[in-house]
Image 1: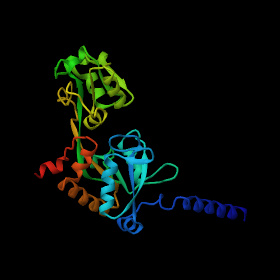
Image 2 (image 1 turned 60 degrees about the vertical axis):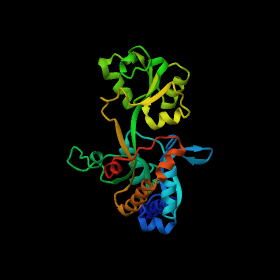
Image 3 (image 1 turned 120 degrees about the horizontal axis):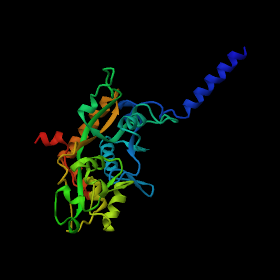
Image 4 (image 1 turned 180 degrees about the vertical axis):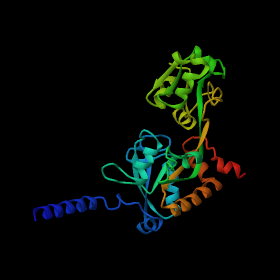
Length: 297
């Protein structure tokens, strides 16, 4: 009798806990989303110019893209702010298919997902799909690595050899950090300055403590918005880096492709009628269409 009573209490407790997060603990179909009148969107915390808060107001390119999509679908938005984990698989698990480790909160849509077909269809060591729980779709921008240089310090030299004598700053554990440390037989290592983020690195450039910064082009442009003629941003010297550029898109849970199709239609329209260009222009960032749209020209 006591064991039956204990079991009832346990079941009641589980039901009560789940009732605290009724919408967050369940993935939602396209019909559910349209009926509810809102869509929940996962964006990265403190990741300008893509997603950040100005006071309590969400701002950024990804925020504005999501707002425009929601507007066209006649939906409100509820934001889910996520912090980058160890890798993209972890981020997608936390954001859209498994949810927060405690609340199980998950979003209907995740922004800023690298769109890579090899990654999408990757196979694990057992011959099974690695990313079968998500659908990556809707590429809307092509990101790339670049170098922001102070030409007074580099004497307009566009090869990496100048950094045998001048310092270059990079975000720690970034691809440019690994590449620059290994290139030219490792001869640049002593002049590589590692910063906690790209904007700290740009501050070093502004203080003339380094001659250049290497990172994502859009973040370099955001960090140096009113660029003086003495500064340049280009990819000169990065021809041998393993990944020069990549498409950025979105992701939803695998079961809800209808949502992906509806959003992808809106993204295509935004690229075609220049609304996407306008969003990037408003942040002073160079817009480069994803390879999908470049091939269709």
